[in-house]
Amino acid sequence: MKGFVADENVPSASVASLRAAGFDVVWMAEHKPGAPDVEVLELARAENRLLISFDRDYGDLIYHRKIPAPPGVVYLRFMPADPEEPARIVRRLLLLQGIQLEGRFTVVKRDHLRQRALP
Image (tube, rainbow, N blue to C red; front, side, top):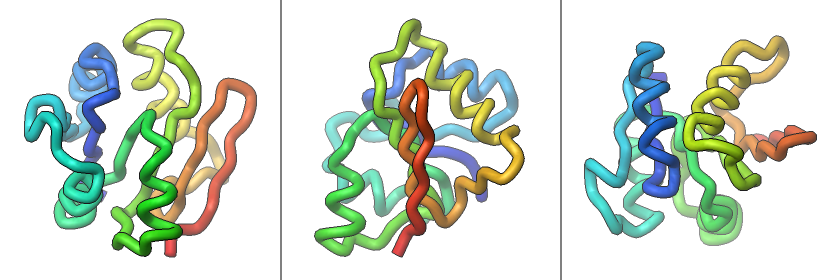
């Protein structure tokens, strides 16, 4: 995995925090604001990056519309308590034993984590 694609809905403070921690992050708000979700998926796949988003539409695009998936998707399904919380959660996920983000659609709630294999 090369790094991350952070969807436009990921707060800039989280993008900055991930970058400061040494991660290579393409933020759609800088890269191509307003890009359709299909283009975001294509970019993440083409550049071998995990996608981070608060947008539930990616599950539908990947599993029902059969759009080719990126190496992994982290769907954050909560309202952040502060703008850096998404970055803290992603960094925590990367450290968890037994959790693999590549090849998985990972749904993160405050009290629950669910993963499904990508097609």
